[in-house]
Length: 119
Image 1 (tube, helix red, strand yellow):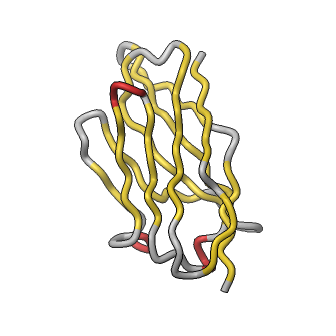
Image 2 (spheres, rainbow, N blue to C red):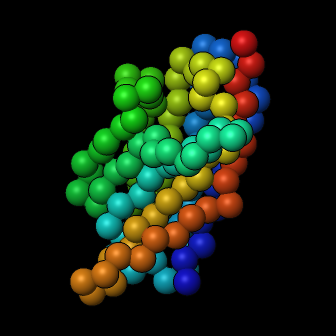
Image 3 (cartoon, rainbow, N blue to C red):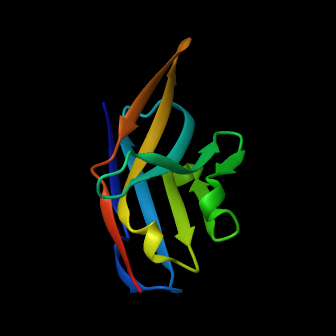
């Protein structure tokens, strides 16, 4: 099994910054990718940012230029640096990990961390 523990959420004013961390532990094996998703109240969960094992990143259009995803492979930890935060960034942020097992990919989720941006 794989465990993901997120930290770094909180309440900040618009224009502020937060840094989320996601530490993976357990039977990690070969990580294909790690990412961050978010879910606002009453809305579907959406991709925020993702980084592959090769370091390729992709971002939601709404966060490009403001958010940066990174990974520390030695620590099996992913980070999401969020700058210039807006009220619409409010939501529960979930860490995601895709683990390669042979030809298959297994997906794991963290418990989520609340991010609230006040206007």
